[in-house]
Amino acid sequence: MMGALIRALTNNAVENIEEALGMTDATSSAMKHAIAEWYAAWYGRVPTKTEDPCQRLPYAIVNKLCKATFGEYDSGLQHTDSAKGKYLDCVRSAFDACKTSFMTQAMIGGEAWAKPVPMPDGRLTWQIVGRDSIIILGRDASGIPSDVALCEKSVSADHHFYTLVERRTSFAGRLTIQYRLYCSDNKSTLGRRVPLASLPQYERLEDEYTFAVPIDGVGMVFLRMPITNCVDGSADGVSIYEPAMGLIHRINENELQFSREFELGRMRVVASADILRTHNGKNH
Image (cartoon, rainbow, N blue to C red; front, side, top):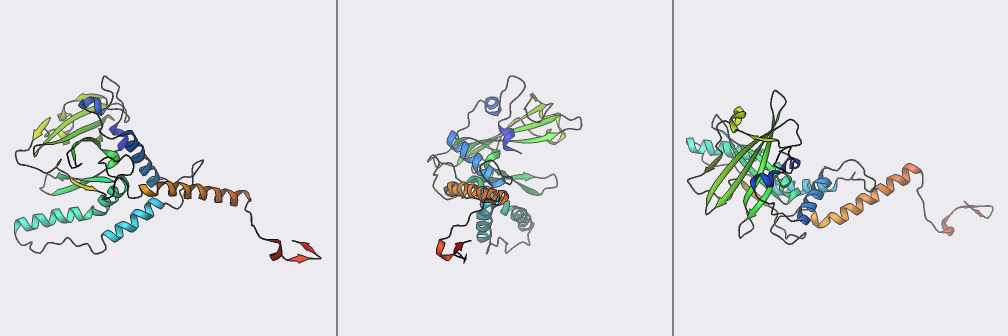
């Protein structure tokens, strides 16, 4: 899944996923700009006209905090002799395998989700969803997302691009999941809506399903950074390095200036005249 696909244009009457679902992204313009800036800073490697991100400060910050978070982490279960215990231990082991990626995405985007994915053999695996790969359509009174949309991209053997749009809504303790499949001739558009059975991996999915038993939230593990939103004051989580973004940009700007001075041979040394060596009464 990619954040760019979330807002992809289509070549028919449906312009984007928000229009397809008849909903609007609840995220403010300020937050959208901030989220894009966080991920640009995280993935930034190539110098631009104004900055050189060679120090990779976002990575340094997140990496140190992740190591501290899991320094004494142990999720091992004590009793795994029963069939239930063994199954839970397998689920735990699968989650442990992606815990660092989960925490990393939450630190970058302020929020992240771990989506449970049942496998045909009965195993349960996890898919990490970052803040740049999801649309928040609504939040409950406590600020927890209660209505979200995400997508999954597939390419068929005949070079058609399929996008599965998934909407998860929690209302009165009941989780409802809706699926819509779109097909396009290029990877940058949604294209036309097609039956879910168009691809074998989706043929068993229902267009809409509401779980009979209560399920917390939108059926995904939710993680949000415990810092106050300093972008727009909303319930949206913010990146762990958002308060330092101004400093990060300034350091990157300085790095570019320093590298240019070295490359162009314009490095200057400032020193008072009395500490310079002299020869025949002349300063050198």
